Length: 236
Image 1 (cartoon, rainbow, N blue to C red):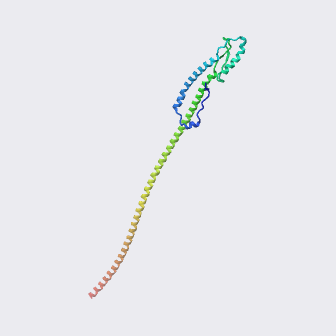
Image 2 (image 1 turned 120 degrees about the vertical axis):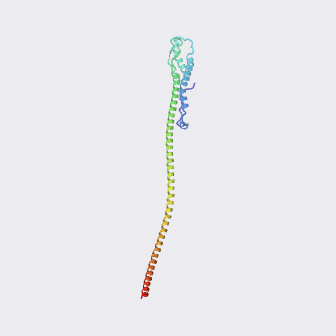
Image 3 (image 1 turned 180 degrees about the horizontal axis):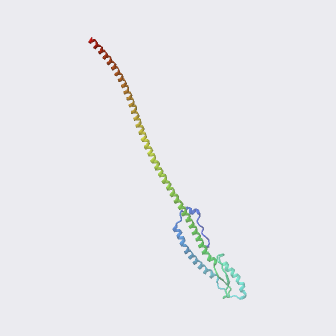
């Protein structure tokens, strides 16, 4: 019979970290298996108890009262040797009704403790798995929160990029309009300079005409004086 008091070692932290999230269905199945394991352990202990007691209660021939005390000690020692060390702890007293002086087993505390130890080991595994599950859930929540924050940051960055693109498009449009305005201003300035030159030329022509008018007035005055003198000569 194998020693069932050996507790299965819990999985290493590295295995838990590499395995991803603990399956909740597996965890639920482990919890539901505990009562079945307890029932199975009880059955195994009961069958082991019947086999062991059959070995202890082997019938012995009647002995004399003088040999009773000398026989008790070797039989008790041989019965203990036939048992597994540390597996079965019995309290024994001489049989009050029999004459053979055999030892009567009162309890199997070691065998009874085995299923308890197995159940305790299973409970430790369940607690360990539950703890790892909580750690995984916490890590998952942290990862989800981080992903949400990153998505929000990416959305903000995309919005800023869109705004920057709009501003750049507006700046390009403004620069284009400014360039067109500069061209129009240059054209207007050229037109103004042309008008100024034309005005200057007109003024010069006016001055020339005024000079011509003055000369013509002087000539007309001279002719009038000449005609007046001729008229005076004719009247004499």
